[in-house]
Length: 337
Image (cartoon, rainbow, N blue to C red; front, top):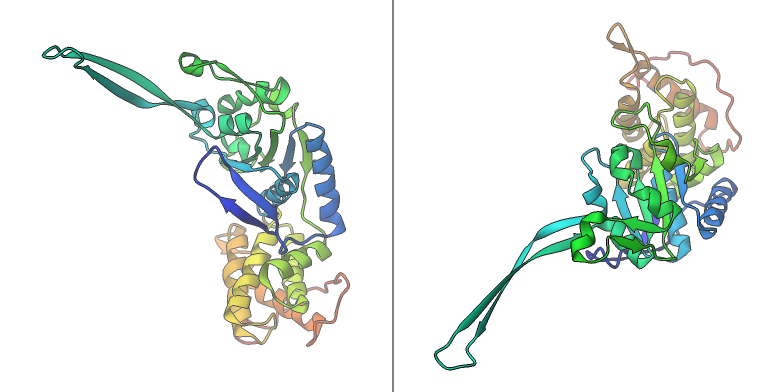
């Protein structure tokens, strides 16, 4: 899945303008999610895409945001975040000196030291009515995200630190919308989210897409023929169904294989050494943690899974149904064919 950026400026005031990309794979499964998300957002409620890493939550968030037709502000969760990283902070001082020589030979000097406040992305998004995408928000500490509570419930951004620069409260623009994404709490670097924040979000659970959707995503993102995309996805899904490494490999691995294969001019075939090399390198990384007595349990099976699936598709890749896999017969290494 992909979303095209049509305008990108450095200023936090303008955000980023987006429009849906022709490369975004739309299937009934995805469209159902998108339409539900848009309905919640248009009703004024923030949404939250939750699910395993690598399944397309962020891309889906950008696509939904692009459908709203508003500039987008992106924040990526960070364990080092403080509230000031969201709302803003004192960013130095400005010194002003005035010389008054109205009367000849009499010089009057005045100096003024004024601190400077700089808004950060949440404040800018609230003021200007942007769509906020807070990606992997639960990587930020809960106390940093407390400022969101009044934003999402009362439509007020509370920033007491701004009081000496103006009002400590900012009324949120009526067009402001928020999209959150998160990974499961058992992932490394992820914090447990406070109940008060979760209670303000409409959570949409995102799981691995169906086979047809994954095939279309790989086609759209790589430009490979459909027959090659089907083989790649069936390899990915077979390894995933073995359930050895926390829902991996994900669609992200399939996209990586497909794009590199297209770049190198290869084909998804058992007798294509380029394809075998790419699969080995990318899929090994997705299974390397699964070991017994220091030996990888899945790595040695990858060549046989690739061979089995390629053979079942046949030379022309005409198999369009969900494959019923037979137990792998170990026919030797990838090099041995």
